[in-house]
Image (cartoon, rainbow, N blue to C red):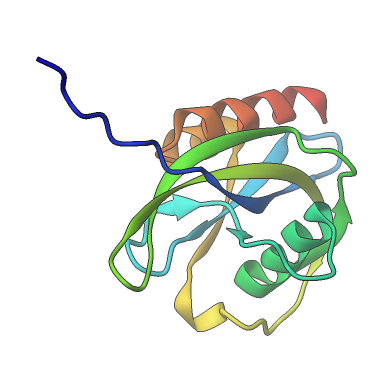
Amino acid sequence: MRTATKPEAAKRVQYGALPYRVGNGSRPEFMLVTSRETQRWIIPKGWPKKGKSPRRSAAREAFEEAGVIGAIGKRSVGSFSYEKRLRNGAVVTCEVRVFPLQVKRQDKEWPEKEERKIKWLSATKAAEKVKEPRLGEIIRRLARQV
């Protein structure tokens, strides 16, 4: 007897920024933001923006969600997957391609300031706070490189 297998839905791609800063000779710190719905700790990320490259889309998300501006990496430093609940209730698997963002400054105001919390953490603490193991690995790996 054969069992019907559901075709796997294609992963939807998002672009994310991993904001970090390095003080005077100290270890890097990473910024996490809370998601709007579940308040879990994540990185700024979102859908591709029409007319913008993946890295510019990631930089835009970092500004909208956390008010940070800086130098965005030219290449992705990795990717991770998560399940996103859409407004219509459907759940889709998203693959987030992560770009490092060396933060130069944070504006006093930004579009989603009232909807999210932000926190600067060591690589170890940031990697522990995020739910996605692969994102934790990306944070730890980037900490060793900067």
